[in-house]
Length: 488
Image: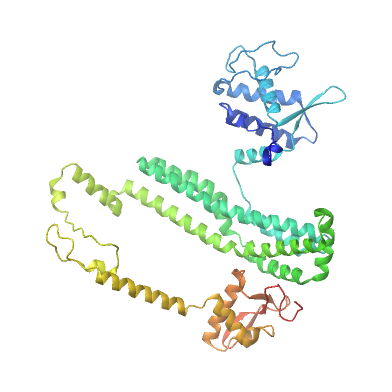
């Protein structure tokens, strides 16, 4: 007995999208789905067949042969028999449209219903709808609205809905936060695909293709549609602190948690305590997702810079071959291959066997006897590597890690009270530690302190020592989620 996805989907559901006419089946599904979106009721069979006929009339020359494996494809009034080849010139568009429609019905994408007045209606299947939507999205060009996700999360958690229907608001906000992170991951990973295609075009030595790949495809599909919109939007920074604050308040609001968990029980049919834990988990994950936006944006920036740099270098290598190191090496290789003695005589080199490279490796400039590779000792290289390792470990020891900053806040009395900037900042060193605490609290989920704003009505900043800093509070929280000044 089938399990998983194919316990719901028909076994031949994807067969049409793997056939020789897969592009036409996909196009007809997109055509049907757009008709479905424009009509409030089911689509009459005659309308669907007519639209399919129009498509087939335009693309008949590109239809490939398919065996006629669907008995009863034709409806009364169609041709009595049709040839096996869909490209047969004697088979009219109506017969071919009926055949394509019947195959989509047999594969489970569409369903057919006869109404009381004997009108035949073509319906969409429940399991076919999400796949048709995905095909339509791809066909129309994937466009992601990053800003809408953050705005939706803010309106759901900070609006009036959260009071009376908190469980629905948290569920939807959690979905939107996940969608934002997934969209950013897709954008980051899609850049690699363009990078690979760019290198493939470079190997084929076609400058025009490289320029087309960068300025037409990459610039249009990634930079204009996604990257520029992401970088020019300030909605993440504008709403994030308010979302963090609201999530922290909801996690501390026992009455709201009990009420929302009680309503959530009716949906999940589990205990109230399990519903409470699910609501708390989703709120914490929303907070963590928004904190991970900055690292993802940094990764996208890095990948975009690498792509742009590679594209520029490849184009320069075509236009000015001697302007890059790779171009110069290529010219030398070509000169040697072509037997240019003048260029060959001007190239001198010395190759040395070493187990690894280090700064001291560059000091080996003396000549060795021919075939003698044992004269050079690796002592200097090993000493340099050991010294580098010591310097690195010393830097790691001195760095202000998240553990050290947490211990510093504990030492300032964070275990017994809420800490304020005026008490924490006493000089330059304390100010630097305060900045680190602010960064860890805003971006790291494993930091032992939570950042809270004092009052929305204040100006948002205070003076501590000789520094102007945000008017925030550091409240310590324990492993069980309780905070200083509250019951665990």
